[in-house]
Length: 529
Image (tube, rainbow, N blue to C red; front, side, top):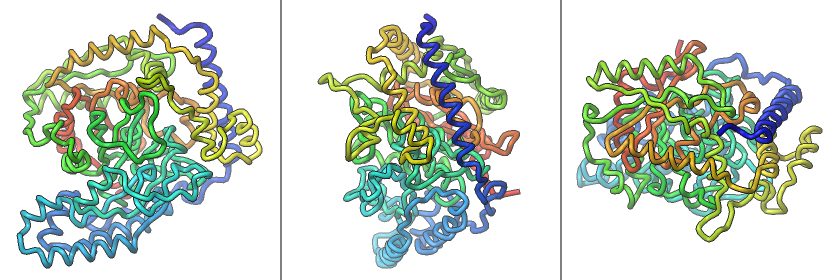
């Protein structure tokens, strides 16, 4: 079933309107930032080139102090953040005090290294935190000006687990406004930049995390993902990230809160530069539910079944996947077959061409009591009355709106969206769910493009607002997926691929990530020549 004439007109109009305002946005912000054309300084401190797992081991063994490690990352943040605008509020003084306490604890520990490793596996390791996660004493705004005085009174559970494991938060990082756009830009903190090219986006909504990790200002971080908010930033910034099977890692005490059936699609998970940190971080973040993932079970990649899906089949909403991303996915297929002796089967699902409509319809479904999701316009206006997108649009045109064009556009899309759920789209999703689950079983993984192109220029996503469907569809299917970097492309920008597994089979995609890091080299220093 093709789109109706009305739906085609709606798609065309939305793309046209967003395109016009993207041009206007560029016109109104035509002053070229001073950092454009510059490059990040290279990493010179070897502590910044060590995984969190190895740093924790060195700290436990007194080969390096936690204070030295934390100070190294503070120095790096102070060096690169003027370029990136990724960390929006730091807690450096408190972090150094906590690091000193760690060093004292290690000096006084009588039980040996094994006791510390078991009880505090990340002892003394610095951590960055997405600003939409509650971190006690830190801003908790998601870039909304009306929330600028909101400070978190307690920690979100996943951050609390990491802190109890010994990790030391250095600060909070920027997001898109209300975490609902693929560029981390808001009028409270400004725009965050990509470490590989400061004129390009770092993704969203966890773009501040992706940017500071990609720029070597952090070694591990945390993100949330309801449409690709972990995976797009990880892809654009050349790092690893994992969207967990939903319901395993708590998403409580995050903003905005989920409503309707959105808790079935949202996941929190680790973001990091080194693949070996993914599994231990996930085990910690999952807390009492970690057993659901059987993360201690060894994975033999040769016993897995591998598949590749090169594109969505041609959607009216998304642009075609670029040649360099098609080519890099083919290279992954060839290396897996050569290295592991497996056969990677290419498969196609015609329902994937409806990925955006599926995501859009399911995000709007009511909960079990029939209550619909909280309108985005209400979130924009909190704690006051709901925002009126048309009025905000007029204010934006004269530079008076407190909201970004992306948020206003989403508000406009919301008020023009059909309230009735499409039975055809529901059928497409149910068939896709059934076929994908049958394909994967308990021992299958598939490769899927992370996006249609490498990191775009600032504001360009307004021209192509639906390309996130390549990540969003995996949320609706409820599958775990690991985003893996695959080196740099023709323009010196990160390439990558999604590795998707069956429900609760997160350990399979994490194991593939380790292999791909060894094969393709993992994260690259954006400041290196």
